[in-house]
Image 1 (tube, one colour):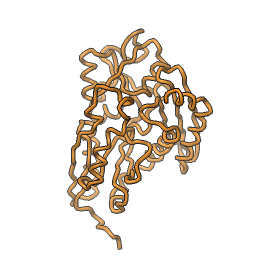
Image 2 (cartoon, one colour; image 1 turned 180 degrees about the horizontal axis):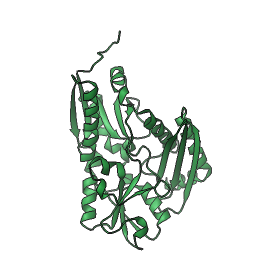
Image 3 (cartoon, helix red, strand yellow; image 1 turned 180 degrees about the vertical axis):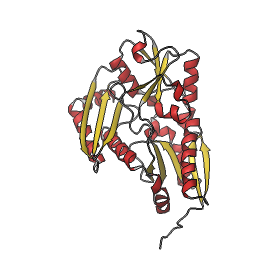
Image 4 (cartoon, one colour; image 1 turned 120 degrees about the vertical axis):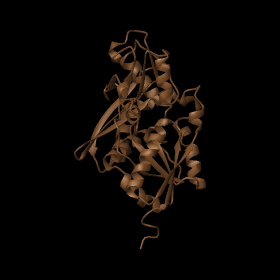
Length: 312
């Protein structure tokens, strides 16, 4: 017999309190309620340091891990059972006390061009200002559109859209997934293809983190793991982990499932877009981490190590 109940009685979800984070937590809440109708699934809203410090780029204040630390504290002290994250916010090296138990089905992984003035990046004149908080996006913008000005943009999704609407920027780049999930797809003027803006590792996917050593949660959450998404995200995360990737490094990795093959693309660049290392590989879907490590090696062969050393 199982050592824990087949059906959970209560599951508490730790979440950030931004509108998008709450959407993601409520999405998981709905899935769990459908799986376990008798279970009380509750949300524990929290504010993280990443939400509080809005006057400096993430790269300057410690990286994306600032968006999950308080949620992990809730897992450790037992006030929450699971934490729901955007996978692109989850550090590549997780502390031993935690496990990532499920990765949900991916929404669009691509970046979106949002503007009240222009239909696309190609339509923007020299000197026009594009807002982004991401070194990855900044490097690719500089490489493809060196005549545009790139300016830092922090805040949650609604704050960024408000700054655009107030005229502080001519256009901004956001994750298409967030806009779609919040019913704001009409704000998307163009979706940027991977050739122009290779996505962030895990972009568009939702992850569920727990305190290690909770086998009952592993069993209860198993139906929420989307195998096709998980294998792609695992390959992408392996690239970043092998290259010590964080939000402080302009790095992108994107995997697509093609039958029994994974097509994995990646890049490392200098923030000004002057130096670029690009590579792509295809490999067996059964070994995503190995493929990610191979791609990282291929990027090093293209000069990624020198670019990373210069950033350090």
